[in-house]
Length: 299
Image (cartoon, helix red, strand yellow):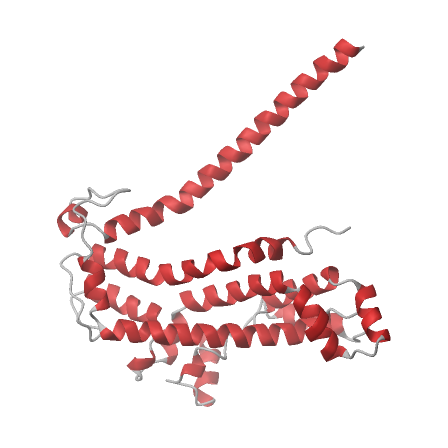
């Protein structure tokens, strides 16, 4: 009997080891698929034009040079666009988090009547929207064209982030803790600021990262709403014009950047636009991992 038990345990352990190896192999493969294209772009941005034109640059720079970055930083309009993007991203993230918290907290409380109907209304907007033309007409009628608020107000609330926050508050904040605070005389605002928010740092950091990354990478709304005030063009729109200018024969944007090979410019501006937001991620990584797991397991 002992021999039989020992013999059955060994194959089981072998099967576990095989599945663990396959899972790790797939994860490493997926990570390489995501990482190698970015390494290739960085290598192209640091290579000389001749090697890039000859398609000899893969994962290591050839003819190392930082001339592309020198020419980008020499353009004052790009630095101004970077400043505008930082300001817009900060305002957008702060406003988005305030709206999300103010909507998620009451919807997560069982004593709030009608919360299911209101939640359905928010959920409905995730599947159906007015479209680009009504959005443009609305911004124009409100007098927000060519203003920084046209980049901050329209998309500052996300129904998807609201549902994540609501689920986290529903399952992550013990009801007994709220009841104890009520017995001590605490109201909704005191409970929100003294109990709920301090216990919700992981999910708040996660959603703040979602808002910041989404705003940082967006340029379509700026393409529609910022027409004449070129000083308000964010970085992504500025880089879009630079890439188009390098690829086409006509002038779209007043700039001092000029490169013989458009591919080098494309690679350098992609790295230039990606690095700032990548530098933020390590500071919120531990909160991000905790935040995405909140509400995933019910005890």
